[in-house]
Image (cartoon, rainbow, N blue to C red):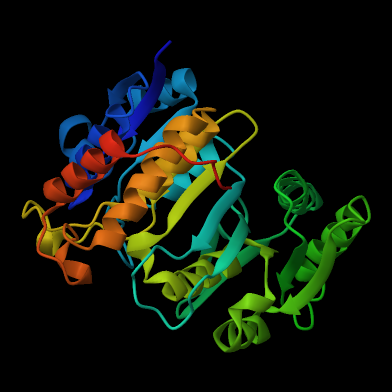
Length: 342
């Protein structure tokens, strides 16, 4: 049976990295049926909508999305496509594993962190208005429901995959009501998981602690804005956003995406590195219970990085996007599957 996937290639380098990832996925032998759509400025030019109705209808059918980078205007223009899709399908858990790839030089080898970010509220609720000229108010929304379910998601994942420690990240010393509610919900959930160590750190101190010693952390759960900031900070431990996967997960729908930008300056030049989207696709394949295919791709990707002969220019190689994908496929064809990691 084929897996039906809503495919959003995005813009800028999006179509190039998406095409590379699709070729790698199809080389596993797993059957996919792709429903491909444009969103953002490209879609608006054709349909007058930034997220056309047929995209929504496709996601309602497939319940799984693979999405390339989409440009979001800064300080004006249309709202984030990512945020809109997360809200529409209640994709409340943003899941970002932070792990090193072989032979990418970093200051922190063997990092193994997981960021779990609440995805639907906080300051990202987008409730802003101008009180008087020159004064803008932005509302931060924290609810017991959303805080409890993101904590439950984190603890359930930790138990299922034998993670040993979770820290709730907050600023409850200042925002005593909103972040205080988030902490109370995390504490209540933690009581149901006595096998998992639970701690709490203030967000600014967490930034310092991460830079000093990221190995002290295992999983971190936090509200929306803190998760956006800390997940980018942690990406630097493993080489940057070009290497980090991301999943947005709800109760009956999931979206897997690259979190880096659309890089319009190199679009169409066959220069982009597709690793981040490929690692996001690995999360998708595992979500579809195709664990053998996930292991096959992961092992091949790691061998390409070990050999260093077909790396893209951003990490010192000379290969283009398509040549990098060819190298991963070649390694898949000659490689032997190993037990899947989580």
